[in-house]
Image 1 (cartoon, helix red, strand yellow):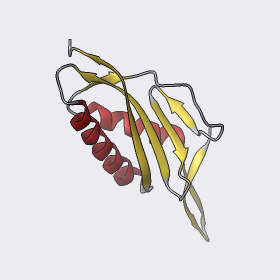
Image 2: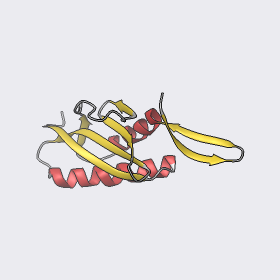
Image 3: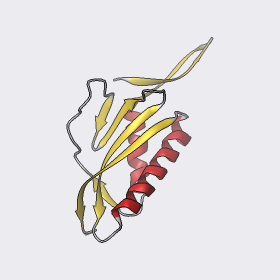
Image 4: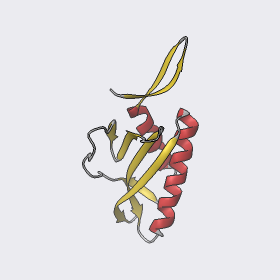
Length: 117
């Protein structure tokens, strides 16, 4: 299991697993209006990807922090750009709040549009 270093002090180091970061992002998606599920997402394109978990990809940012790629399914009839902007904002805020890590970028990929059944 790979991890992102959060803190290093004279007493030791603190790491957060990429899986834990992905779980925080997933739970944040559950609270986003218009998101009805997670997509499968594209294959991992980068060799340095830390973790892929059900539509959430966590990778180290080039300038520090982390980058998230989210594959989501949106409810039919909603403005896709507005839902994506809300997802980006909500997930970024929650991941930063819970983990203390800077979120450098959040990419939202809409895999499908379907009814809310």
